[in-house]
Image (cartoon, rainbow, N blue to C red; front, side):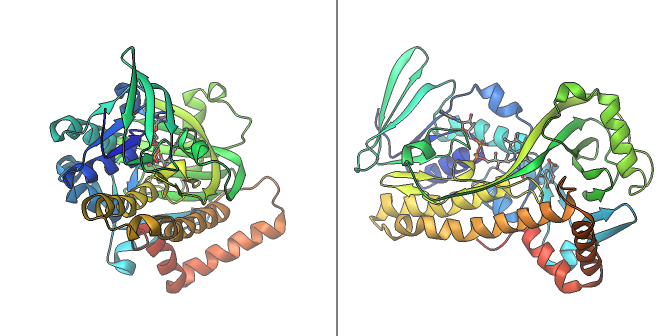
Amino acid sequence: RRTDVVIIGAGPAGMLLGHMLRQAGLACIVVERQSRAHVESRIRAGVLESVTTDLLRSLGIAERLDAEGLIEEGFNLATDDRTIRIDVKALTGRHVTVYGQTEVTRDLIEAAEPRGLPVLFDASDVAIHDIDGDAPVVTCRHAGEEVRIEARFVAGCDGFHGPSRKAVGAGPEFERAYPFGWLGILADVPPCHPELIYANTADGFALASMRSPTRSRYYIQVPLTERVEDWPEARLWDELDRRFAPLADGPVVRGPALEMSIAPLRSYVFETMRRGSLFLAGDAAHIVPPTGAKGLNLAASDVVYLGEALIAALKHGDTRGIDGYQARALARVWKAERFSWSLTRLMHRFPEDGAFEHRMQRAELDYVAESTAMQTAIAENYVGLPV
Ligand code: FAD
Ligand code: DHB
C-alpha cells in the first residue's frame, strides 16, 4: 500500500493528526497495536485546554464535546486548613473544559471511517524502516496478513512505550521519576464539589475531579509499592472522605468503582522529535506528571505544529515547518514540563521532605493566596500557554 503519512498509534495524538491531514486532503493510514475496544476504554485525562477543544472544533468533531463538556472557570488549591480558589476566568478571560480522554478518542475514532481515515487496529509487529531517506516504510501484521505501507512521512504517536522513539535511536533525554503514584477511581456519583480540588493534606496529595455532574474521578497519592489489590473500594472511599469532607461541602458520595488503577508519576523529555522522515508527537516524545492535566493537551499542541508542517511540505513543497517542528514543539513542551513539575512539587508529600520543605510548601501557598501575580501565573499555565 502507498500513502502520504503513516501514523503509528490511535491515541489522541495519532487520531487528531490523522483528521487534520485528511481535512487537508492528504492520505494517511493509522496503525494501532490494540483493539478498538481497548483504546476506547482506557481511562486517562479529563481536562481539556482550548488548544485541544479548538482543534476538535476546527475538525468538525466537537458536537458531543459542545453538548456534554463542562466549562470550568476556576479550580482550587487546598491544604488541610484552607482553600485557595484560582479564578481562571477572571485572571485570564479563558476556561478549561472537562471532557474525558475516553470520549475524545471515541469521537475521533467514530469519525475516522466516514472521512476516509483507515485505522488498522490489532496490528502486531509494527516496524519502521528507511527513515533516513524520503521513502520510509512501515510494516506490520494485520488480520493475518503481512502489511507493507510505503509513505513520504511517518508520525510516531505511539505513546511512551511504542517503537517510534526507539527508531530515532540515541538522543538527549531528560528524566525525573517521583517517589509515588496516583491511585484513581471512577464512579457514577455526583462530584463532592462543583470545581476541581487539588489538595495537599497531611496524608498526601488528593484530587477531586469529575467527568459529568453524575460521574466523579478521584485520585490520591500512594507509595510506589502499593498495588490496586491492596485497596478495597471502601478503603479508598474512607481515605477520600477523610481528605475531602472538610474541603467540600459534606461527605464524599460513594458508589461502585467503574475503574481503579495506579499510575506512576514521571517527567521525561526526548529532545530528538525528528529524524529524517520520522516525527514524534505526544507521549512518544515526552511525559509529564498528571498534576495540572497537561499530558493530553501537550499531545494536541504537538499535533497542531506537526499537522501544519506536514501539510505545508506535502501540498506546497514548503519544508520550513518540518525543519522547525522540533524547536517549536520543545519550546512549549518544556514550559508544560516546568508547570507540571512545580505543581507536583507544591502539592505532594515527598517521603524525603523534612520540616524545611513543608515550610517552603506552606510559604509558597501563603504567597499564592495573597498574590494576584502568583495566581495569574498559575491560571495562565493551567488554561494553556499560547500555541
Ligand atoms: P497514547 O494515548 O499513549 O496513545 C498511543 C497509542 O499508540 C496507544 O493507543 C497505543 O496502544 C499505541 N501503540 C503503542 N505501541 C504501539 C505499537 N508498537 N504499534 C502500534 N501502536 C502502538 N494525563 C492527564 O492529563 N491526566 C491524567 O489523569 C492522566 N492519566 C494517565 C494515566 C495513564 C495510565 C497514562 C498512561 C497516561 C495518563 N495521562 C494523563 C497522560 C495522557 O493520557 C497522555 O498524555 C495522552 O494519552 C497522550 O496521548 P498520545 O496519543 O500521545 O499517547
Ligand atoms: C484529571 C486528571 C488530572 O491529571 C488533572 O490534573 C485533573 C483532572 C482527571 O482525570 O479528571
